[in-house]
Length: 123
Image 1: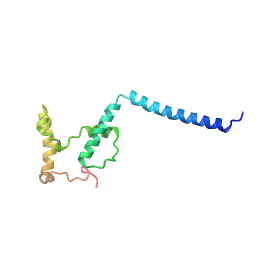
Image 2: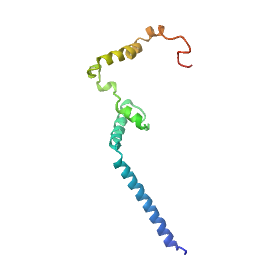
Image 3: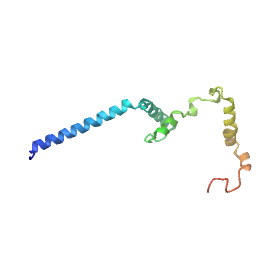
Image 4: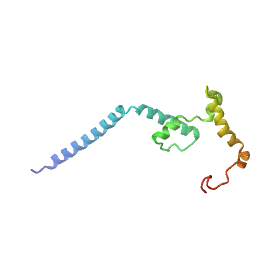
């Protein structure tokens, strides 16, 4: 049973069309089945906006975890202040005592720094 050239070409075209159709259908099915599709789409938009605001390279590719973090990023130019964090006085005080003040007054905290090589970061 030998195939003529027309039959072989017809078969190849049908296989190619079926392949393209199945790929398109699978992409659409995954899009509608995935419950996080719209969340990820919105996260990508917000991450692109944050990257643009920070002046970073827009070709940066972020994974799903980085996208979630980027959507929670608050730029200091957006007007967020400590007063915007309501009901978390103890948390604000803890952050201020452990992070903000040591960063602002480094020279005082340098005296208290650890001198042991075992307790400091590797060089």
